[in-house]
Length: 107
Image (tube, rainbow, N blue to C red; front, side, top):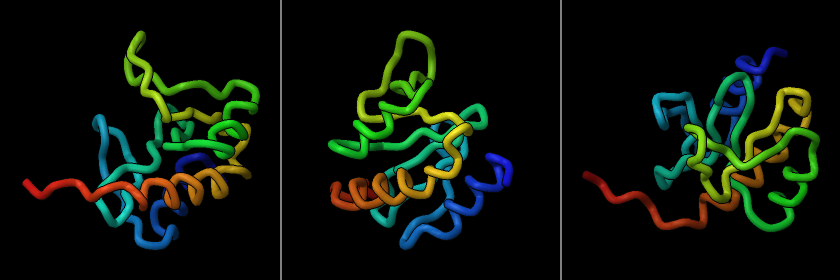
């Protein structure tokens, strides 16, 4: 499965989630409107905390996401396609966390 195919699968199979856009990139949003994952340069970026964040950061090449150089986004961890087999686990951890956050306000 290619990274794009894996992203598409996750975006369409995570409970109570929908595909969306963030920073002009494909993302996955929870029912509350919050993004939980971004597809960026054939890698996945997940919103993670606690043990899930520690597990992600322990992977070779994982790092804090910077949508532009020098602008790190705390809590967002970019994970290489080398770990595509673990994306499901991180996506579920991100969904569980983001689902606890207050809903985005309607404009």
